[in-house]
Each structure stands twice: as C-alpha cells, then as structure tokens.
Amino acid sequence: MSTAQQKLPPKEEDHIIEVSMKHVVLAFGGIVIGSIAIGTGISFARDYAKYKRQKAMIDAAGQLLSTLFNGGEIQWNEQNKESSSPKVTSRKPVKSLDGSASVSS
Image 1 (cartoon, one colour):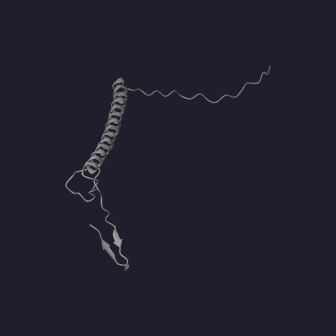
Image 2 (cartoon, rainbow, N blue to C red; image 1 turned 90 degrees about the vertical axis):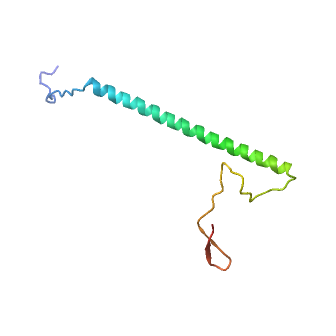
Image 3 (tube, rainbow, N blue to C red; image 1 turned 180 degrees about the vertical axis):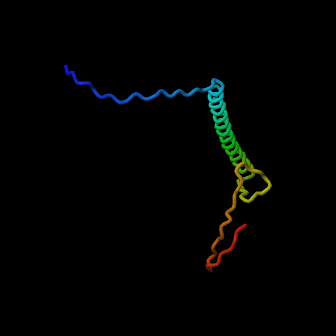
C-alpha cells in the first residue's frame, strides 16, 4: 500500500432549497387539471369529427336513395338541401381560353 496521500476535490457547501408544501400541491394539482382538460378536449374533438363523418355518410345515403326513388335523375345543383359538407368554391381566378383571368363566385 502506498503511504502517499490522495488528492481529493475540495468539499463544497451544501445548498438547501426550501419549498413550501403549498407550492408542491399547487404544481401537481395544476399538472393534473391541465392533463384532464387536454384529454377532455381531445376526446370531444374526436367525437365531433366522428359525428360529422357519420352525418355526411347518412346524408350521402339519403341522397342516393332519393335519387333512386326519383327515377334516377341526379340533381347536382340542388341548392335547397342543407349538407353536412357544404361545397366550397375557390376564390382563385379562373383562366379562360383567351388567356384573360376572371374571378369565379
């Protein structure tokens, strides 16, 4: 065994941070409430999207049945029925054959 003394790093002072139990409870409570709020929001968003998809499918099936019962006439431009997926028109100018641009409405 060696009799030489080993060099060790100098001892540092201990730093103590005091935290109030009230702050710990508030922090964990905030995390729990935030997680519940985000989970609920995601759940409602998924359910609403599912509802919209089902409503669109039911509307399409109803339109198909009404088309079949009306003698096969397809009424493409019928404006009096409300749909769950409304037609959105583009606001981009439509180019005509002569090269000029016109705005569609």
